[in-house]
Image (tube, rainbow, N blue to C red; front, side):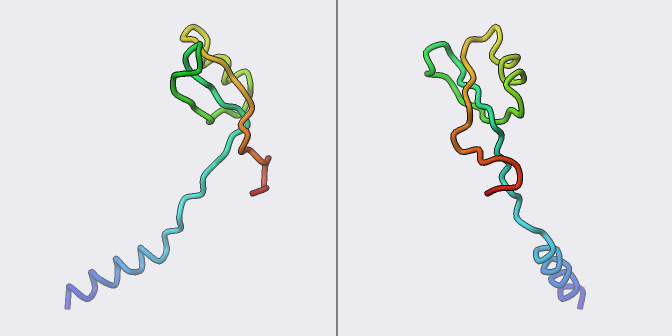
Length: 72
């Protein structure tokens, strides 16, 4: 009997969990002066992005995949 209860709890938990939605942000940091480094598109503002690349090289640009709040 305990195996059935355990399976039921696991099934209920799996059904209750919803997949995580990806969050897109409007600004991307391209690390490295030549653009050959990594890329991070997790910035809400241009200033956040600039603060991140300051001193380590790189630049900021608009995220071409960002569609604005509430739109997908």
